[in-house]
Image (cartoon, rainbow, N blue to C red; front, side, top):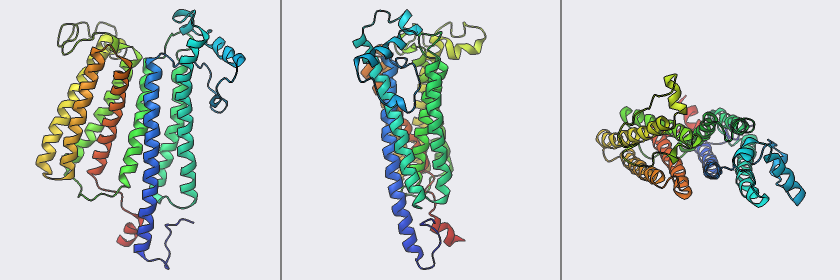
Length: 366
């Protein structure tokens, strides 16, 4: 029996307060999930930058949580790694101690993923069976749980692409893995902000649409960044604003068929990622100005202003990443800032719509 079920002995105001209290608990749980997911994505970036992603060659969702505990187990893991092309063609002669370094990065990434699954599933079950989740929120949370399970499978699908013929993972699969993580991140933020108190009126239709388009553009830009990472394209053409001595470099469509350049041509992939950054910058700038005109003095206009400055900071960090030839700390800051921009863009977009109505409000309206 749901706590929110109609009860003639409890007045609507008490029910509404109870719903608000439950929403607060749900919201802070989702924010904690977001924090762990943020850490997971950043550690995933470090795993890629240190070329550690193929150090664990098996997918053991349960048993894999326990790392090697003695010399024999370490040697066994190392021997499995020595059978794949990355070791044979790139890291041949690597010592056991060197292997442990890359192993721990991948193990930490997988451990965080498992921990995140537990952190989401167990509280969800508790909230659900104690009647603390409103009916309208249940399908949203189930979809998030399903996406998390899918992400685990996609992660292994990505790793498997680098175990037989390649020395690294497929850029297609890496970009898919990263983008799905960010879609989940955005969806959790959307749900969490929907159950947060909103003191401002909904924004104008123009502001709402523009905020939504910015979220879509940021997600697409993250996908492009995944292709850049998968091709190691950031290590090439390390100048700005010119690229290969031109604003628009040559040989962007040199491969055949033409469309494959957007996924496999290092120069084209980096150029499109740069272009995407310029597009987001100018759309965020236009949105900031338009929101101040359409919703002057409102929270929405102030958030549009802050979002533009976050995009500006991310652009600066992105340029620094390029000019430093993908120095690891700068590159990780760039990936972390992408999540910050995405989080705020989603929160801003959701905020322009106002909160989900409480169930008691819906019942009273009827």
